[in-house]
Length: 346
Image (cartoon, rainbow, N blue to C red; front, side, top):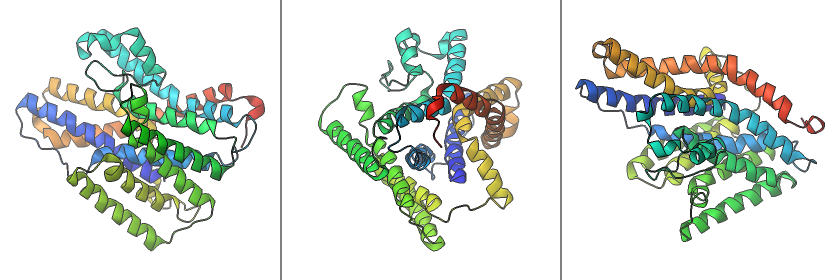
């Protein structure tokens, strides 16, 4: 599962590195065509399915427990908020120092506050994204966490089925009625990817274990659907969500306690630990690298693809440092202070 998280984060970093390479190419008069045979954006969908799985699987001892909702939300806020708020604050500082980076209205206090509180609001350009645009995925995550906390008083099976049904119902309503924001945001079909992950966690809890050939077939089928769905311009939930669920099923429904025994799997596991840091910090590294290369004149010497390799490598190294020296200790420190002491359930 950690390797899959690493791949998902890397795919987003590669997507954005190619975008910046395109900007640099246009600035320097290069010919550059991004590699689009792989739908890199599907990394987000993999994250959503993983989230649905992990939230249920890691909360096995919280179902039906008194005060479980408070414990769960405290843990998720401690896990998600500190690094995102730090990234948002850094982005805001850059915007204030260089106002031309952002539209003035995006810096309105109400919009900035909503960005910190994970409340989806439409920007002046119509996009429903927070100040630090990558936070749109976290707005979905926090919405899912809140709903999940509300059903923790039920047994696992009832909670998973009930929440999945509720998500499906909201998507149907959103498809039939023109809802205002943030309701329109919360009823997007992409939320069903959390339900797919929850369903996989329920299957694992009930003892389903898939053989290696079956899991290999799931990965193969997922890759075929992913590439084919992107080419056919299918709805995102089908084109990306279903393949993401197949990948997560292959990773999650195998034998337990499979150790990382090779250099590649150990590296993937380490990067999986730092995948959240990679997701949130890579734009800073990629953009900074582009500016340094252009200003120094080195960009002309290395070309766009070498820049992409350097930018993604730098982002990976930076994420490992951020995870080790900032994200992990800060998360633990905040969790100890947010989580009710008498409700610290295993």
